[in-house]
Image 1 (spheres, rainbow, N blue to C red):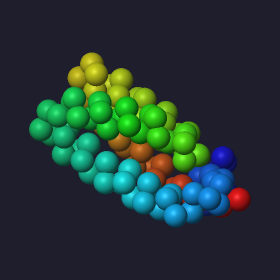
Image 2: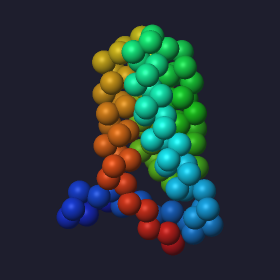
Image 3: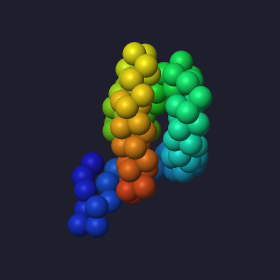
Image 4: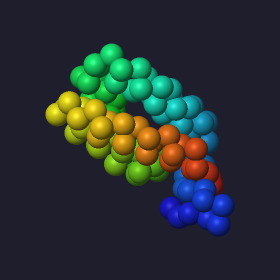
Length: 104
C-alpha cells in the first residue's frame, strides 16, 4: 500500500477477489451513513458491532486500514466516545474516497 502523487491510496488485491471487492467497499460506504445516523440517535452499541465487523473483515480483503479504523470505531463506541466515533468515521470516509485498487 502506498499513496500516489494524486493522493490516492493504492492497495494491491488478489485478482480472485475482483467479484467481491466493489461490493465490500460499497458496504463500507453504507456503513458510514449508518454510523452517522446511529451517532445522532445514541446507537453506540450498533456502532460497536459495525466497528467489530470491519476490524475482522478489512484485512481479509487486503484493506488493513479498514481493520484499523474498525478497531478505533469499536473502542470509541464501547466507551461512548462520540468524538472518537466522529474521528474514525471521518477517517473511513476519507480512506474510501481515496482508495484505488490494483488487482494482481
